Image (cartoon, rainbow, N blue to C red; front, side):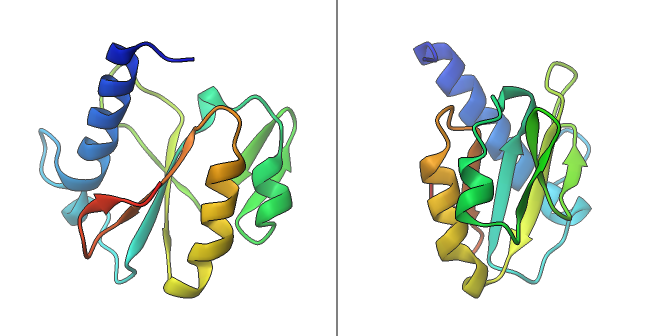
Length: 120
């Protein structure tokens, strides 16, 4: 499991990806007309592929880890790598919540742009 500091740092990174960065906001860099956004830390994936089973239209097996189909790689800071985002419409949300909930290492997160909060 993660230490309390790692959890705080991880959440801060997600906030940077979604709402701000030193160079401007990620909303400006990665604009979306969709309400929800997945943030996926690929380097933390252990290859359980529960996400693939829950939502094969978004997730696929790629060697030893899962890939997010159509995801964009983002770099929130110099320490963090292999972070991907993908925007979701309302009808794509349910199965992706299931994918995030089934992930044994909690490396899939979903945010709601309208409410500006984390769904999972």
